[in-house]
Length: 359
Ligand code: NAD
Image (tube, rainbow, N blue to C red; front, side):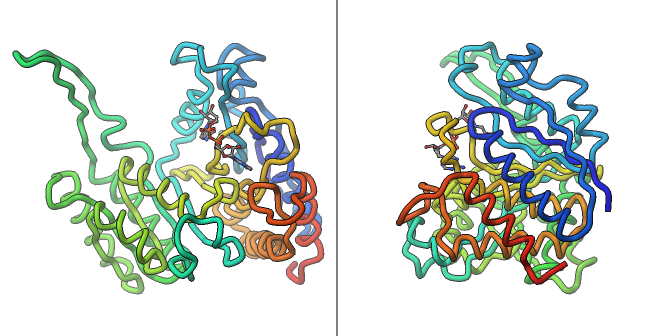
């Protein structure tokens, strides 16, 4: 197939890890006979330095016209003192909004060889393989905000609203994912106290009727937070609203123990998805060639699956990452013996894709 992929390296280690993501995409193209056209663009601090804004209109147009966007990370101390509208992360928010991305997917899979990197005991991590589906554009983060004064002092409001269609589309996505996985959706809410959560629960129960092969369970967010630490392997797909998802996905990231290993995808109605590692621009290690590229490379696997529909190719990339980890070709954040460079890890995964039996 032919596909156009925008590469947004961004700041700090972003360009270093995205270069390895591209290397793996080149390997997939060579192995499976695809033609990928890459369009490098700037975002975040890099775009501020070059154009005075964190995302230019022409970059947004490039992204809208592409099949998918691969992003590194944005931000860094150089731009910390700038006013709010000129912060690097505003570029990322504008991109998500411009592409209409309303769902964020974050898989949490603990590699058995890396279980000792987690703060949890290894036996608690056996068979953990779940994916969070977080609603991304609604809820309290986007509700009306205001302040007033009472006789006792200041009072602040943040409105939490959800419309039925916003809930339904993200819950449907979760069910479709579960159908291709282990067939279980956990819908997380706070229905004992929140009206938005009661609506969420009603919609999830209704959507479940269209997916008889999938089991739906409802869980309160507080007990879900606990169950993630005690029985994470019992989850398959967890779907939840924006703020609960924000908090629970960070808890999920802590289970894995390495920020550098974790991918994410943001999806919407359109065909263009945004794929990025969950880590930031890591200014402390930028330019040293030691950043872990595996979170970006696993984001490439998600890009192949979700935006290009190339499932066998995605599985080949995941298998190659698994083999690289088993071979101990790891950057310093994971290596117990001699750490390898960002480029060495990317090159190892790429060569395993090329020599894989698939294709
Ligand atoms: P960070 O994720 O950049 O770094 C946290 C720690 O993890 C650092 O010690 C870093 O060296 C390490 N780390 C992160 N990614 C790594 C990798 N791939 N390989 C090896 N080690 C890795 O978080 P932070 O320090 O809080 O933020 C730094 C900058 O990144 C800030 O400007 C922040 O706003 C920005 N940020 C951007 C995003 C994004 O672009 N989506 C997300 C989070 C933070």
